[in-house]
Figure (spheres, rainbow, N blue to C red):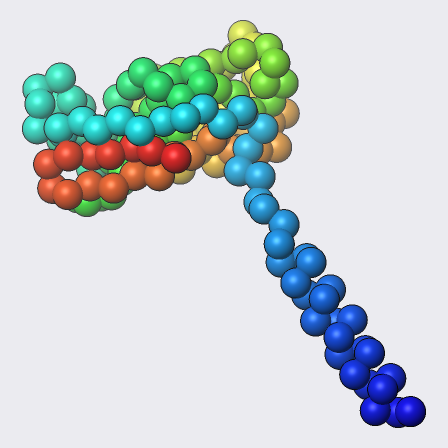
Length: 143
């Protein structure tokens, strides 16, 4: 009898672990837009991301992209669609500090350009990030 109870408890715990680990993390409140673009970072049009710390705007995603070069071989690509009140279609812009992306007219939130995290609310979620790969010349941004 005790063995059957122990097996039942173990089975319940195992099922509980599987069920809670199946949740998919919601990256932000921005609707997912299909994206798969590649750019040659050596093209003069992209001179602003030739060195770490540089950033550019690109078309794509929901409301356009901010691409930030965080290292020699590392890039961060974020959607410009503010994740607060997404139906209002608020678009963030990099301010004069070149470290903060904000939209004071619509969503009133501020985000770090380096990773899209919230600096100041009311947004609770960071900017939608996209996957990036870099082979030394070509940057691919995709989801």
